[in-house]
Length: 137
Image (cartoon, rainbow, N blue to C red):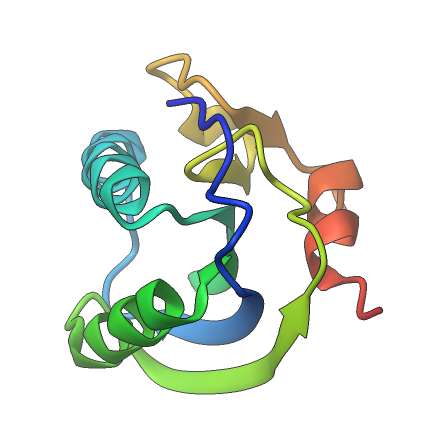
């Protein structure tokens, strides 16, 4: 699901975290999880990117401070992952993923449903979207 833009008056934040998946996820589970996340993120004016490799999530979310706080609280209660580690949270001037309510990167084999916003990772688990997410500025 593509995302247009947020209100000019909102203070934007970016949050980056890492966690471990409770269970190994297959294509169908990832597709359903992303569909739900994209709908909720669009309602909260949140954009971002989710990486899933080796049963580890790394997610970058960006949006209005109140929305980031609300989603972060929810993510910490989500039983689909554990060992949740906040890597960074800071105000930002612009979004890195303004075109996506949730872009997604993983191994090409997990894109059986041709998900919009899917960016396959290389053998090392990296791609341009992952690098954009991880860059601290």
